[in-house]
Image 1: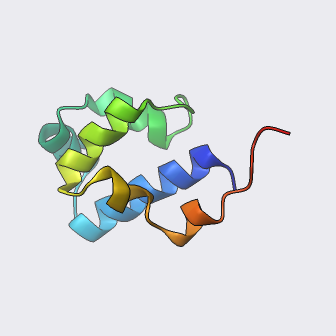
Image 2: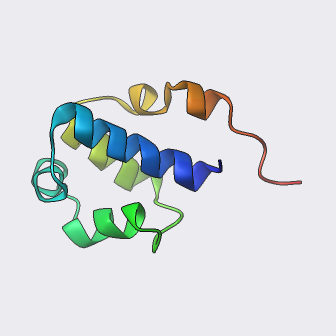
Length: 80
């Protein structure tokens, strides 16, 4: 699994844990629903760190909490 898929899966996981819809996450994070959908459905495969930080704010977590998962720790190098 690559970085994009890991970021996407983490957002989905947090939405489920926090019981947030895309619309509610958009309100809480001030990120447009279309931007969130673009990340989740693969149109935006490289969300910026500012966007991820804003989503973290919406989830009520820090960036370090967002990336502190086994999946992120086990990512392989993508540049060969």
